[in-house]
Length: 163
Length: 424
Image 1: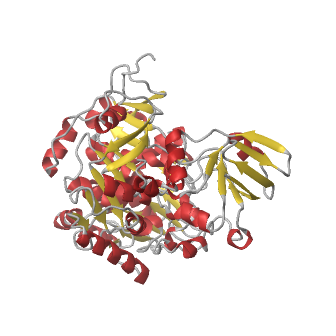
Image 2: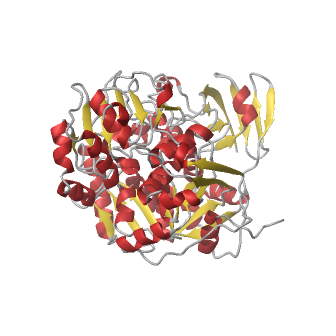
Image 3: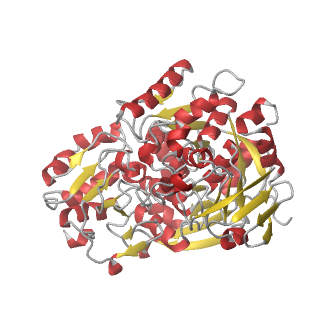
């Protein structure tokens, strides 16, 4: 599986309160959640995000609340992949569980710039920055996590008898 | 591998629940859980996911807890719909531990109070502050809603076994210094990602004089250092608490003498000062030698971090016979119905109301900018809650300063961030 899109970049410690403020958590409607994605950090996000875009963050991306509404809002807004230097652990497992691709890469997250045209190939374990003509190797997912992703999420992996 | 069998407290609990003799950091396991928790915000998402399972019913109707605490009493129509969905699910599946307005309290204060958590348990909760129960020697950690659905259906959860950091506590806290100051001090020292993916394990002679309430506050904010869990070694105080609340038989797991810790910090409790975390990260800590005059608009005393009876008693000691500054709105929120009743019977409400504060029914409310005290643009609050991210308590241009109940109460009187000694 591979994805390609333009980059929308943020800094360190992007917390789930700015990804989706709690005042909008009185709904589970995915489109409604996506319409407020990143609102308290970047009001322009929802107007400029396009299907397939790649979000890049710094350290401790997704820290704070356990709200699954955060990766749901990001996924529903059209983001195809989040790359960060590292992720807060609940956000990481939530993303895997709902099938939002997520990659830890300190180097890529550091060097990729806002607006770059970036492609990621999960099978080959590569990120390619078409704008900067740079390539990054990425850690493959562990067997266990790969099984969840291949099954289409945690629930499906149980239904298919994998877990 | 050398010392492969030497495990930390957390690793021992995980091994016990995964039915393994030993395990090592980094290993992926499927473990049995003793309690699965959700609230009125995370449960609705979990209920929708649960419906996708080709499976009937929850794994154990006594081992699922749902607490309507975040936007309850229902703050608006949408919140009411979400609570209704949870209520219907609880009725359909005969969930024993469903707590709604009238019985509910803030989940992480309520569950221990009801005796639903014992030492040695694994608790997963679709709320990041589920790590609170580490105070009782349990492994407890926040997960997402899909995880909650998975655990409700299977009675299990998947974990990557965490490495650990040890905090060896010595000494004794000074007057007006509390568990809140200890954890803010630690987060200031190691940073908001200082314990990312790791266990924070607390031990040492300092435990002797550290109350269970202080431990709850410390474990509660392990997540604010990125920690997977924050766990205390079980001692006489833990056992006395568990017996008092009627929890089930404790299973005590001590770390092996040679267990591997990635770092060891010695924290002398006697040296810790009242600490305040400035906006917009809990690691932006300062002590009073560096705190300038910061005029405030609101004070909140409550939450899963500091809404316990001892917190209210501390606030009352400072507010007794005093008047809150003219332009400061002070909101005091006992965390559970029991705490509410106890505080009322002790006469604390009279002290609060005469000082000019309001007392709210239990709710998470303003902590996450839900209701019961939202900030306007440019406003500042001193709060005993756990997060001070952008927009956390209201307008994205408002500010939250995290502090102990003692500092919050003193600040309410002076109208600016103050140490108790400045108003008494």
